[in-house]
Length: 215
Ligand code: CTP
Image (cartoon, rainbow, N blue to C red):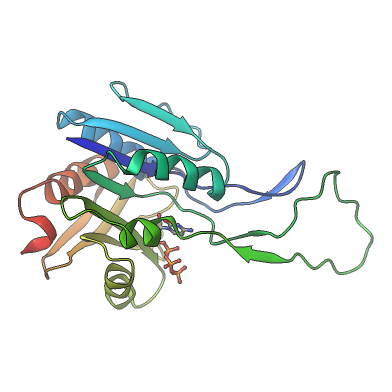
């Protein structure tokens, strides 16, 4: 089985020294990659900039910076993958133009124009093979299950990991996490607060199990 996992944030360049990014540490994605390797799969990890040591035993590690670079890497690897888990916190917007030289302050208001990036997961959902399992994450601060179910349907996923990032004891930089795994056919697995390593093992066993989408 070949599993493709994305992890970490992306960085969208404003000028040579500044970028837009987010609070993703990459810990959840790296824990998933480690659990997937342990399960005996051939694992490709596409990682945004993080300060973590990649798990040993990966088939391939592709390091990227921007959402556009992540899109290219995932597209290239997706075709030959049985399971794709998009755990990366991909930027939804990027500056329309990155300045070639460092922007100098002028003491006035500065307006930064942003354009949407490509939704990698929705693109994969649109051309998903019937044998492929597609897994997304929904990091939400309100209406957790409602928003997650909407993403599951809208992006044509088999599974979505609904993650409440408003809680201080779990989510972004934390070593712990709690979530609900929702399947396209109605399965619901509640994962209580636990280490990202433990959670990763549960996620891998659920999404790689025979019970595809929770039928
Ligand atoms: N994702 C992606 N490409 C993007 C943005 C997000 O593949 N450009 C993936 C993430 O890896 C995650 C899922 O989509 O698995 C959820 O991302 P999110 O940004 O929360 O979803 P949106 O549909 O953009 O909804 P919103 O920003 O309104 O919450």
